[in-house]
Length: 269
Image (cartoon, rainbow, N blue to C red):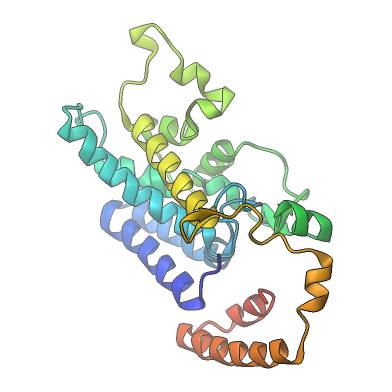
């Protein structure tokens, strides 16, 4: 899947809107400063390194986060309608946790986590458009995300820490200490971690189905092109079409008003 320059810009504007609407001062200002500082990286980064996961395309990260925020708000409404105790967390905590649940995927202050895949075989056969940047020291996504927040002076509540830490549920073995307890006093004191996990799971599944279930059928070979097919695709007609596409793209980029998108989108062809 590909997002247009306008879609990437619109998603970013929507993301900033959630911060302005749901996050209170003084950390609203700090969050806006942080997201503005790393806007180009966050705006264009994928949500994963390969398409078998979800949203492994430019702009995929922000689109995924937006879906998790929306799903979290709707899941909270569902839980409340079924009688869940909603007094143990706030809507701000819910949105903050959803907003930053995958923040660790951005890498560190100097380096991105995901960089373009240089191994053509892995790109063609395994669908790995990106690879992990070995300049980034290892840390789990939740740990790195929480570190980035605290290192930029953005405080978070205990509820938010546990929700971000455990948003992958029991898919992450490290979460057993929080989620797999049989003593009542050791169980989470709020449903926030479960709501966030369900929202994240829902969003990732929807993104997976969108990628592989096309025209009422599963297309598991979609996007895995052979070298021979690539050679045959270079025709005069295709070259002509590409020029038309670039012309349309140029118009779109001008409407966004950010010249730094130009070189990036040229690489998408």
